[in-house]
Image 1 (cartoon, helix red, strand yellow):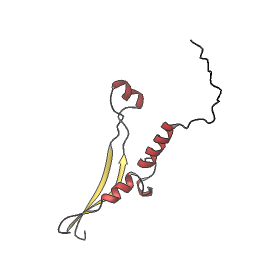
Image 2: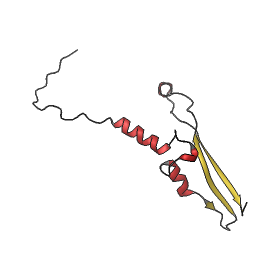
Image 3: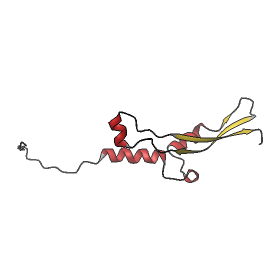
Image 4: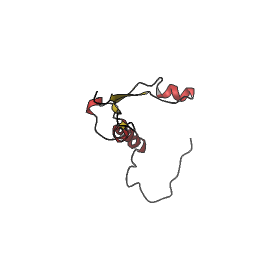
Length: 103
């Protein structure tokens, strides 16, 4: 092992933030995975579904409405996915309600 010599006179002022942790927390806030479907805030993926739905038919008879979404468990863990060259993906299941008139 080679010893490094530092010729600079400035010392480190601050500890840099953990940028991976910031991105991971932001993504978890987007998914709201640990929150029950009925108690999710209107932010992230929940807000996107509510922005797009309900969808009405051209004649107004049918309405497709968003009810909830659930994120399943990934098929493999992070390390096995990385070792096998696969993606670390989890299924997204969305529930919708089709209304016919007033029913």
